[in-house]
Picture (cartoon, rainbow, N blue to C red):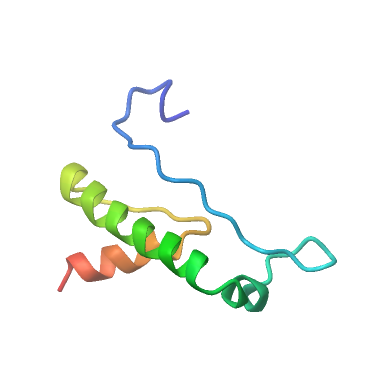
Amino acid sequence: MIEKNNFRYLRERPIEYEQNEYGEIDVRLTLAKGPRNFYSFIRQVGDELYFQGMLKPDLVVSDSRLSSLLMVGFRKL
């Protein structure tokens, strides 16, 4: 929909979450993966800072990315 309506956007890196036996996102298991996931998260935060600096959005919507919401708060400081 965004592409069809010619809105500006930037693609983000894919993210991976661990899932429990019911197919739900398991934060505990994701955090247990340790440095690999932490490194990915830090890269996402850097990307978000860069993207928001380039696009200067009036609105940011996030369905699952904590990094998007953190950077909105960070940019307001």
